[in-house]
Image 1 (cartoon, rainbow, N blue to C red):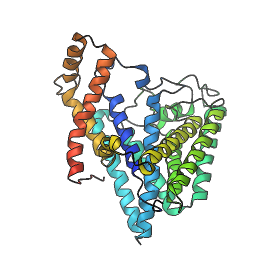
Image 2 (cartoon, rainbow, N blue to C red):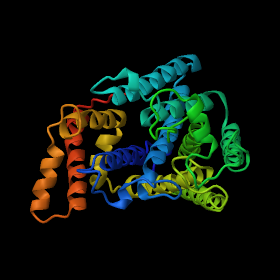
Image 3 (cartoon, rainbow, N blue to C red):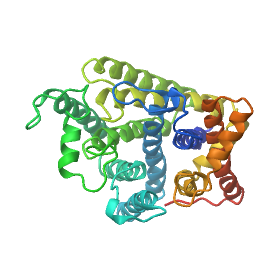
Image 4 (cartoon, rainbow, N blue to C red):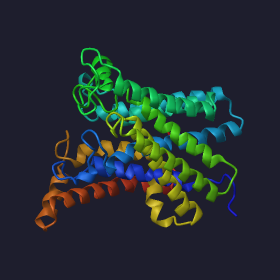
Length: 366
């Protein structure tokens, strides 16, 4: 019988897999030649690419419970833990700003939001909820946020625009608030997918991860934990599917239905990986993902930084992507497959320093 409360390797693996897929979708050989499944949905609806970011935020929530509970059990004071949370949140946020500015450092055209910025906010809010509230309150907060967000986004008129039209990107409360109050460069000119209002349901994604973290902390067998994760995941997916008829699946808006569905998918993925890795001990094929998982922020940051060398359209780029594409297309490989193969090669480039760090047990924790 397995030990109770043993370290769950699947958490690191799932985190690592999300980083790998983030790099693949962010770094194709050419943006003109990308398989549709590796692109985000333009508006309503989702593609497999839209699963990646919420899965990472979900794992942030899982890790918060596993890590902070361990610190509290060890006798660390909440005040000391809070200080670490605040510092880490700030560091992640600043790294996000750095990635936007790198390598030109054009402060006049700074984007204040982004992937790492959202991760920092979700980490901060979920950590505070864990420290100062209980599971019941966290569940109430999650579902109240999703309910109120749905009411606002679907039924409340927008000043000067009338009732929201969820088929039009410019006619919703998220766009309205971003255009008024979000400073700096906006990713979509007048609104931002990591904007102000959409951050609220993304925090709920982290809370769903926290709930899963509590499940993993229960004093029962891995089999029971896996079953509980599957029940939780299926329940969220069903609820998300139902709500999608009122508030469509939409990553840009981080809609309530999208939040629920992705929370369910992430829970099922975690349960499935726990079954394979921690219960059935099928680990070797997932070891490369763990290399990314234990240094996730570093891996993502390095991938973002090195684009200035590997891509022709960056400041100091040598055009490796164009050379690669031309070489493979000349061999008869299709443009889209060549683009995907380049992205996979880029993952390997990032993996090299990460595996060296892993072998030396160097873990960069912001």
